[in-house]
Amino acid sequence: MAILPLQDGFFISIMNTFAEFKASLDQANPPHNLTAPLKSLWYDGKGDWNRAHAEVDHLNNKAAQRVHAYLHRKEGDIWNADYWYSRTKATRPDIPLDEEWEQLVQQLLNE
Image 1 (cartoon, rainbow, N blue to C red):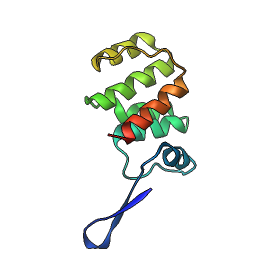
Image 2: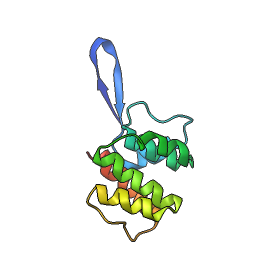
Image 3: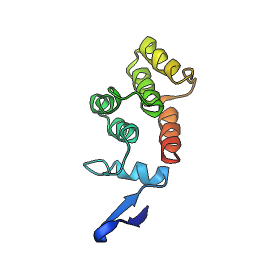
């Protein structure tokens, strides 16, 4: 995890790796610097689908829509999942959910 200085002596930690993200799941709360899509995946990783969904349900950017699609696929609402995948010009992946979750986390950490 990188520590970057901000103004007035404050610092912010930046999560760089999937391993760091995964390790953060042992904490009670998500890291403060996560984007909404990453925070959604963090809550999903903690087993809180409803909170994960609430983080992205109201957002219209591609990353949020992609996570939204994954969450509906996980829920078993395939029609709704396919709708959200299509909004990002993607098709539903034919991989296990845990693999899709990991790919999404890695992709979003690298953006």
